[in-house]
Amino acid sequence: MSAGHSHGEVRAGHEKKLWIALALTTSFMVAEVIGAFITGSLALLSDAAHMLTDSTALAISLVAIQIAKRPADRKRTFGYARFEILAAAFNAMLLFMVAVYILYEAYQRIKTPTEIQSTAMLIVALIGLAVNLVSMRLLMSGSNESLNVKGAYLEVWSDMLGSLGVIGAALIIRFTGWIWIDSIVAAAIGFWVLPRTWVLLKESMNILLQGVPDGIDIAEVELRIRAVKGIEDIHDLHIWALTSGKNVMSAHLVVQHSSGGEQEILTEVTRLMSDEFHIDHTTLQIENSEFHAGLAENEGMQH
Image (cartoon, rainbow, N blue to C red; front, side):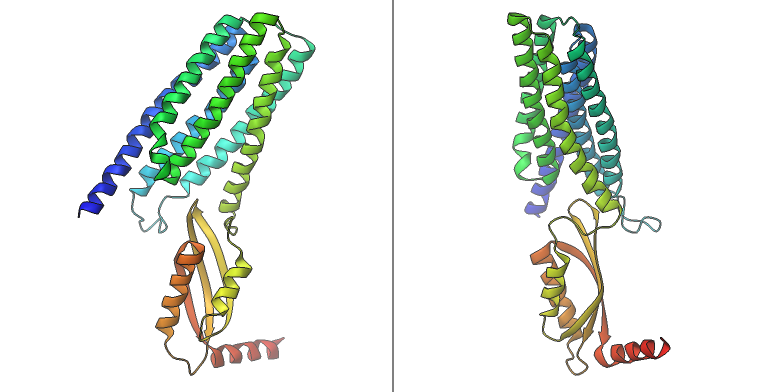
């Protein structure tokens, strides 16, 4: 009883910290966009786009927590976990367009520099750094207990680097007058966001297309299943993910006619998939080897 109660408290604590971090990050993102237009700094606008990734990551983490509370029903027999992936895919496409725009604008400004208010730019960037540090402090402890919180923590940590870049650009402009450095920092942040955006989109599309989850070698899975005593063959093997970290497998297992112990085989394969491949939802169908051979022979005669 005490262990279950503790776990509930930890999860509630994670949710509260995520809400606070989301409120801080989103509020400052809006302020940073306004500051970018007031100061004329493209680097600030680029950092605001990066903070959009943080806000979305935090929001997706909160959505995942809420979804986890909803049971499956007759219309959504697997539950609502895939909503998290749809949100992530939308986020990736939006960020890709924003990053391309920033890179284009940086190119235009290098050709035609615009005046930048470095003092206001520096003040806004320093506030942004403070927001990132507070958010990191909030999420640090939970990052070791929850993958959701860890993902959000890493997003905020990476955005802190963007804030440091903007601060550096503001200081250089203030003391040297090199306005072009603003476009260079903006482009650097844009190039920093693009690869991460591509990875997010690629992973999201792989899940939506029911591809084999990253980190799982389907050939290795098949090899390990064939090594289980009593199994002669395996076919119709499918492995996919409902959402990140929630893997599913289905397969037909051909067993020896005289082996018996089908339940033991099912138990062993299920345990093997969970322990070695982190596949916790398996659907297995047992087929008799003689019956399977007869089906194959009939199909061969028909062809």
